[in-house]
Length: 159
Image (cartoon, rainbow, N blue to C red; front, side, top):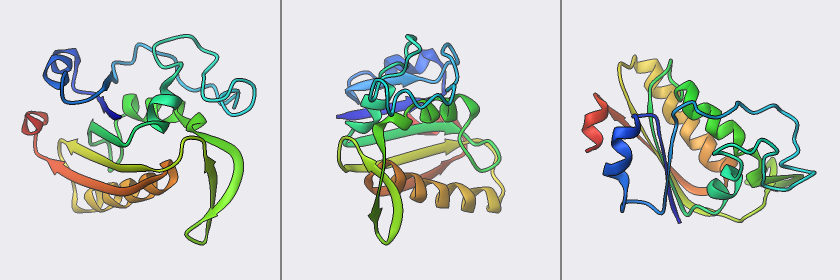
């Protein structure tokens, strides 16, 4: 499965149709993660908040390719995209294992192929370095074999 998460606005949803199996627009019309960990323990991979993101754990966990398109926000995801990623914590379990000599949560759905992140907007050199390193760490934590980062000048460069 190919999942696209983007913060480019609803007018871009139509452009992405047919390019992925599922598209999640980071439009802010959902609640932030409450940190209850119910998606880990009480109802695995399902959030108790029944908004548009209540199954985002499953969507991220089952994706072979996760594409994220986000505005640069000090070398990190936009708050709207970060909120979606926070809500996907249930794609792993509360149990721990070693992966690559490091302790990580056990993956609920197994390994995915790759996470690719495209970030647009103004960047400093340090922000680009931070973003690149963060994508590599996120790929590892989310259980993807590969993490790719691409810097874009404007969001239209994705088209």
